[in-house]
Image 1 (cartoon, rainbow, N blue to C red):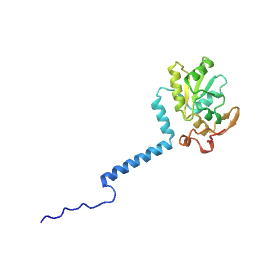
Image 2 (cartoon, one colour):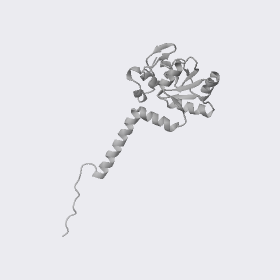
Image 3 (tube, rainbow, N blue to C red):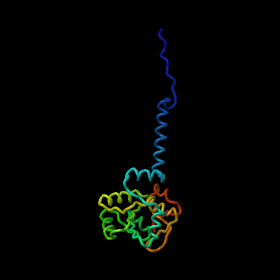
Image 4 (spheres, rainbow, N blue to C red):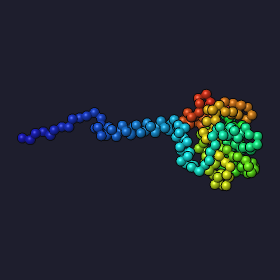
Length: 187
């Protein structure tokens, strides 16, 4: 007489190796989701440096000094979209989203002008600075942290000639880098 085959115990769910793999995958997805929805300044700056290693930058304190120097000609190029610019911008900034628009501004500024580009956090402006440098513009810089850092440091913002405190947060994810009391989607 043969004995009946031994039945494997029925477990609930997955066996240990499969459960471990699922847990690791869920942790990775959660980490990616958190990273995608809540960027950090360190991650932003690392990405900009990695993508645009040859783009020179200027920090907000350095730009502030340049803007206070009456002997300096500074051209501020705002690389953001019209709805972002409408909420606020740096005083005297001109909006230019294409390389041709930016090149025309640089040409009109003349020799000796310092060109500083900015956007929300610095990525779009770094791309523009890289393109201007490829066209031979030497005195062009990306503003580190761009308008978000400028606003977070309580530096002056304008809507036209009117001082304001708000900045367009770009979207809910990137807006987390901007202090909550500074966020506004409309002028």
